[in-house]
Length: 417
Image 1 (cartoon, one colour):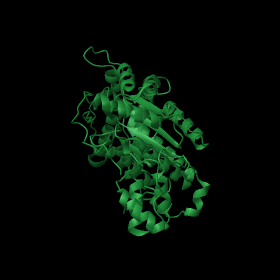
Image 2 (cartoon, rainbow, N blue to C red):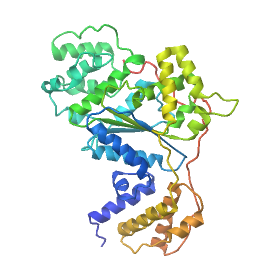
Image 3 (spheres, rainbow, N blue to C red):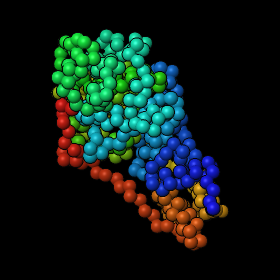
Image 4 (cartoon, rainbow, N blue to C red):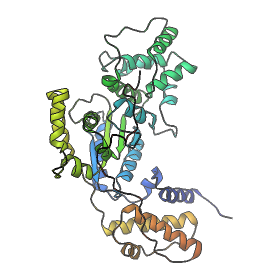
């Protein structure tokens, strides 16, 4: 009868997460850190952030398949361990950041907290009371570009059941007609919804929701909100006007112009071809965003936006945004030998594998390919007592960044009511 003690269960969890290609807190804690220089840089940022300082975020650059996603996952787990709430999203056909309202709904609903496996903040809010609000900045006049989200947040504590669920849904980025706000506010507060100087506009006021959620995270006892964005190179698939909007939104979230007043720290990862093909293109048939976007920003939004774009590309290409360096053979050997040891614990056998020979037989491959090949070789040896060198298989394919107006799912520009 097989006995699974805590050590063996933990080892199985690590092996199976790597087999599935989904790093977990257990796997990122157990395996050697191949990017200690970069992770140390981000850890330093988070330590400053934990002291209440609002600091600029960073971009991480690297080739496809060289561990950027794993690094973001590691940073997510570190942020959670340090007492932050964290949201990690990947750009895709359904998710881009040129529509800030749509992007907000994705990062809000993916929010994780250190002490819960359930996404979101609702269980934490349900343990708080309206009487505690004066101790937070949420009720400060002028805290947000529009006061509606703060009023909704306060109303949340005076409602229950379906109405409370509707207000929470709004705070997570879903639409709610103004008529429902008025009805709920009158029912729970006994007075009409306040009259605002202007109506809430999704196109300009979504930053209020970001700020409100960040403040709500701190209100619930966490240190701040860490937002991690993967696959940022897909911005290159957008048309030029949408790319400009995405850059401006990203510039604000990264706090590269110093305008962030909320406890938010943003870390993004992008393939280097965004720089090579879009930002600094040498192809005479392509436009160079580093030069074109400031001009387009000046035309559409004025001098301040143009200066923001100049600063954005300089900072994004500078030393504060590190490139992931190739790992050495010594580092790979150490990683794969640790994986062999963990596989042995997970399946209770005398696991051994000549990882140097495996590396040389496979030749130059991505890190994920070496990990998958090691697991496959170990599995075959464990099950059939046969020694094989698996063929190199990597499903990570570098994508083209040609503009494609049909690539991203059509989004409702009005977003949230």
